[in-house]
Length: 367
Image (tube, rainbow, N blue to C red):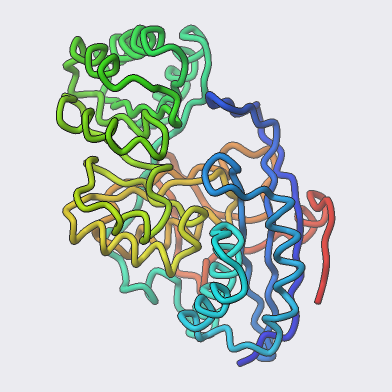
């Protein structure tokens, strides 16, 4: 099989409401879509979503680099995924979201060629269905309480709250949230997106919280503050999840002793499904449980993450709810709160609405 044509789309996915974290407010998500054609008549789709604060990439950069790389992929065999990754690495350093967009399209083609869902290609189901947390962006406590009421009424059991202000203000807000859900069966996760800076102050602040409903704190410190994470790991009474500090296999193996309990694996950080599988297996060998997280992708990137999670026993949780945040999406990944339905379709198992894709496209190229 050979790649015969690649179409790249730069699109803007409209959010139902702004998504706020400590360093940015998003009114839409910029995404790059790869449409890969083969001489067997199979078309695969991939997606790359950037975050400059995580991998150093921008959506404009992904699109520009894809436009440069795409002609070099014409004539290549899309079924040789390992060698395709080696080839991409020889062409360009880093750029994991760019490589994820190509990787996901390759797996979609492979699955359609084999007439199997991607999770079967990765080893088959380890669970019958996947649930997910709902992520709440940074808001006032009043607005957060209203959101929690809505989520609980909708059937959500796990809520992830974005923090990232002054540590004392954040702790006060967290206590109010925990008190608000105390008579429910909900649980809370916290994500700080590297916002805090003083490990001793963090330990002191959390010393007053002993609530089993608080499951973990995600990436409280800067990505390169290894000493600070070790201090938290040694002194905190709450589990720690690493995110921005571990992008890929190289980041993980450089650590002689990881000082965190959990790892948030994102296809956009590590370069796609192929590299995520490697990273999750290494984490398993180190005794670290994993989550498949999101850069807020459409149905394409989200489905790719869910297929990876379905097939790997060491993935214990997922947070891939981008399609639920959009007023329009280009795919039809099915969510039945609080579960996602991957179905038995070949490849990623989703259908692309080409009319919506055309409507959301800002620019495109074809080679």
